[in-house]
Length: 222
Image 1 (tube, rainbow, N blue to C red):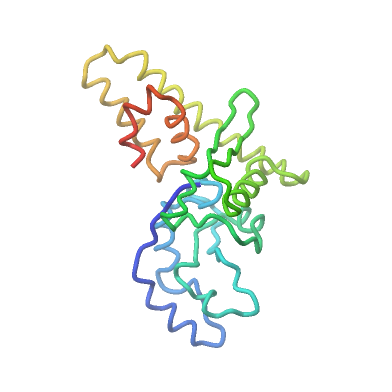
Image 2: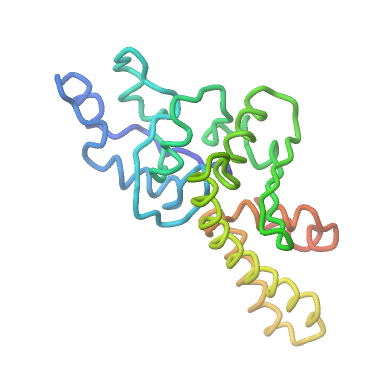
C-alpha cells in the first residue's frame, strides 16, 4: 500500500448528486479522476488495471450519512475483492493522507522461497496494526475461498518480483558496461519503482532493505 495524492477540487457533480433523492456518487468524471489519482491500481492490493473496479468508501457511510457518501476525499479506487474483504472496517491508514503514509509504516515483503507475503508493522498505532491485518487477509487469506483468491493474486506478484529481481541482478553484475547500456537498465528499474507500477510497494521495499541498492536508487522512491 502506497501514498497517493487526491486531486482537487472535487468533481462538481458530487454536490449536485448529493441533493438528489437517488444521487450517484459515480457521476461525471469521478471514476476517471479516481483512476488517475490512484494510478489505475487498487489502493489495497496494488493490482494494476483491475477489471472489477469499485468506487469504495474509505470511511463507511453508515446510517445513510450523505456527507460521507458524496465526500470526494472519501472515495477511493479499489477492486471488488478488496472492497468486499475490507467491508466496513475503520481505523485504517489513509493512503491519501501524507501524515499516514502506509509505505513508511508497513513493510510489505514477498517471500519468493515460500510464495507468501509478510507484513511487518513499523509503528505501533492502531491504524497501522489494523491495516496490516487487512493486508494479511488480502495477500494470504484466512478462509478457504480467501486463501485460493490470495494464492492467485500471489502468482501475479511473483511474476512481477521475479522480473524486477532479474533487472536488479543485471544492474549489479553489469555496472562495468557502458554508461548508455547501464542507463537503459536503470530506466527499466525506475519504471518498476514508480507508484504506477504493478505491486510497486513490494519492489520499493526490496530497495529499502538493501543498503547498496538504496544508496543508488533512493531517488526513485520519492
